[in-house]
Amino acid sequence: MSTFALATLFFWLSHKKWRLLSFAPPIVLLYAVTMLLSYLDLISTPSDLVLKLALPMMLFLIVASADVRLFVTLGRKLLLSYALALLSIVVAFVSVAKLFGLASEEASAFGALSGSWMGGVANMIAVAKAIDLSDASFGSMLIVDSINYSIWVALLFFLIPFAPRFNAFTASSASIRPAEEASVTRSRSATFVVVLLSFAVALLANKIAQAGFVVLNYTTTTVLISSLAGMLLWLKRERAETSSVSSFLLYLLVAIIGSEAVFSSFDGVLRLVLAGFSVLLIHAVLMVLGAKIFRLDLFSISIASLANIGGVASASILAAAHHKDLASVGAVMAIMGYLVGTIGGLMVAKLLIYLGG
Image 1: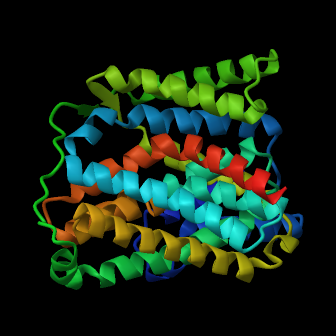
Image 2: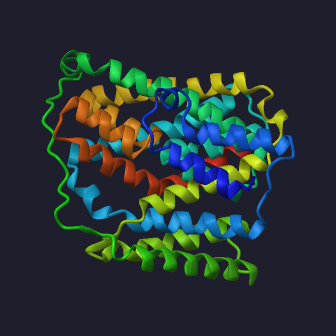
């Protein structure tokens, strides 16, 4: 079986609302299955060129589909909550790296995880490849991400009924207005053109890296070029609907990484899960302290936290659970995470590697 076919199968499964998939996310199942099939020598690994093209294509499509102008419509309270979430996550990762005495490879793995917890799995892949993280360590972090994220989401939903008490504790008002989305239209007719453009950008980014213009390393160069190129489309009022294409590329990348991993990747994973919980604990304490100091409400800090650690879907659902007309607030915050996750993750990874060295 090919990694392409397997990625297609699990991408299709990701659109199914089966109870099993709520406990075992399709993207984690995909990694586990490809790793097992690779161990049994039953799956073919694509050429290195596929990886070199798919990663910058995915990042270009994700960044290009975002509208950064929406972020400024969130208002002071939400913007402050987002900044607090981002800063607390960075502090938490650095603190836990020192507390657990993470060695170089573990520090690199947690650096990649920080990319996910400031953006998403796509950012984690970008950071992992940019810092040459082994596929085995990436697999461990994918499991750590899944376990910690699932518990964190459950906790944030559990806290919803306690919002009035929390807001009284922080002396905050809970008045939030939805983000305005009227200025941008989505166009399916432009999708084919933008996907072709992403392929051209990926080729160009690789050519530039091959020519010797390297920022840190080859992969980092292609990641930065494709992300910056995607930003050039922010000024367009009409945006292509490319989320399905970028999502499939994400599944393809996970399948490729899983096919190159080994079973020893899960040695000591429990320790890393505990380290991940410690990151969330420090993050939570700093968020509560920040909420008390700046008089922020539970809705704002919860959405800001999940927009970083979760993603568009989970942050939107949590926002709607608080206030049914505010789902767009979670979506806008999470989209912003895609834009900062790679750069932020790279910075944290480099710092953790330095501390672990």
